[in-house]
Image (cartoon, rainbow over all chains, first blue to last red):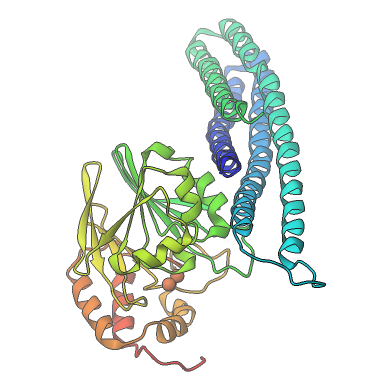
Length: 202
Length: 245
Ligand SMILES: [Fe+2]
Ligand SMILES: [Fe+2]
């Protein structure tokens, strides 16, 4: 029964990861809109906000990166939950098969044992698949977290650039910087939660 | 799996999940629903075992496992609730609301943790957070023990297999052209629904309800005046005929 629980824990955890990444993705989509607005703002602010225009490209890149990561994590996670759910059913099947009271007749092949061997090798295969795709999932999450460190830098640089712009635009440019840093930290916290859901499976 | 929001007012929400692009084509496409109010959620017709993974992933985008306090199965069919044994592992404290006659049948799907709450034939109401949902009898449409879920605040009637259509995977969530939709549901209703009497009783009872959205378990949802169009069409249709097409 404990193997059953392992499989159940895996599909629950991985489904949690996918939903955290989905939330991160919606924030990244907001961020992408922020960056487009910021670009329009930089154009209006003219030469004093020229540096800002460059920054919006960065922001755009960051949001794209998060969206890509979310999509690929989502694909891994969905296939992972499927494997885990299959594994759960396979364990259940093996437990029940073990309870079958059957004695092969002399010189006859042991049908139950044949089935058992087949399913048990499937089980092993599923378990291998699970641990390798778990590895993949963890790597992808860690990688994204690393890449997102840049958001904090971008937000600091944005503030510096904002202070150079003419006064009427400073407020709006600063609010872009605020949005970037808040989006960055919210995305980060979703990634962290996602990562925690996997911690006990390693 | 795609998701749309059907209703949202404060912390009272309805979601519909379906049109899963990764679904095996041998499996009939289904709509799953989730109603949330405050810190409680109920999943209506949670679906078959094959789409459990996508469903679990999808609902966790909006709620947590602790908050899913109940499941509802309109009837005993595999496309409705064969995932029970897997939900049973994730929601050990949840209750399953379903027609009382199906209790010992549903247990075959695996129900060691979830507690069964049989809905009496005449229907009952269910408290979800600060709101209440109505289990409306829809027996013999098509299953001999069968309920719809009505939410008078959201004006949504989740009608299970009633109003079901077999449609393309990329069909929109809402029916856009009623006339064009008829061929997609006619055979299903004529072949699966056993008799006219319960059909007429059901139509009379739901005509008394204020319905903005009629939400079936397969195919497009009916909105606004299409709800009335559907009831009129269903009223005219002779059911219980086993003729292939
Ligand atoms: Fe059915
Ligand atoms: Fe159905």
